[in-house]
Length: 484
Image (cartoon, rainbow, N blue to C red; front, side, top):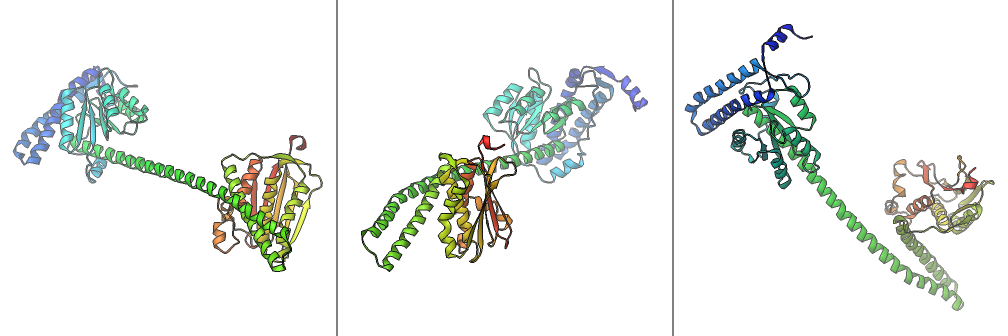
């Protein structure tokens, strides 16, 4: 509810255009500003005898400004009726300003933008007296050009300027990706609340009214410079992290290229070694010890060749260079071929290999070699981590949705902690187990399984609890005609 006394007082005020009020205030702002600057310099240099006279000049200027504020009201506003702002006395800054001042004023490179040469000179000299480096611009376009040529820490921007006013300059700054992080303090001789709100909504860091109080100016500048330097530190750290990431990526590519080259070169001589060992068995009769040694050498070489092939295939799948060789497959035949490969390992540990295959499974399409190697990897891991006398079960059945075949390999071994579920599918995820005394592997077995299944359009998962065994499951989509 409006106060009738206040409404009557407003009616008695003379209505003048906001531009005229601005012109009336500007010379008084300069008188007050220069007198305050001279007072600061006098106190700094020890000429305190000049201070009383300068204080009288400043006080007279403030009395004139008070008369303007009391007797004149602007007829033009930004939106709605103009509202007067309270101006704190120059010697009584607000509590937040005092708190900011207590941390000291940091120096910076400041751009002052004002079309009035006297205002520009006064504010620039005041900032230079505070220890800042100052650049001056007399128009909005000049300010924009200077900011594109040089990096500034802060902009003090006058609102009332011809051709391009402060609002337009502020809008262009905040729309520019390179300049939008530079803080802007807008300065105006008009004490209209709507104008202040508009500037803040457009992205201005703060607002100061003329005449500019020295204490408040220091506090606002200090706060803005601290914020700008914080942003600059963040940007610098981000850039350093980006460069470090790029260097690591380059090193990773070099490492992978070297690994691929070395592994590829190893395969040829190793194949020759295996062929030579197999030829020895056909050359003549070997005594039992010789045959045992040759068999060990062939078996070890075969395992090593398998690791090399895993590495090469993994690199191809990871870079999407591997092409799948699709063919019609039987679930039962695929499982039987995988079980046959791991059967000797199960016999050595006296493990039972169980098969459970649903009767209603149709043929499906897939890369036989990749899927068999996936099953062999999962069965081999299950055998490795199952104690002697245990059992390993491989199952196959149609998924609940009916659109895929689901395979699972279950053991009653030591199990896997839940926090390791994601890590075991990562590249070289078995290194930690190897350090714990496990059988040596490339650490790519489960990663190969994951990439092979995902390249078929399926997914792989694990369910396990320590001491309760583990179940690894994966799906392979069925052809469209068999999904119904």
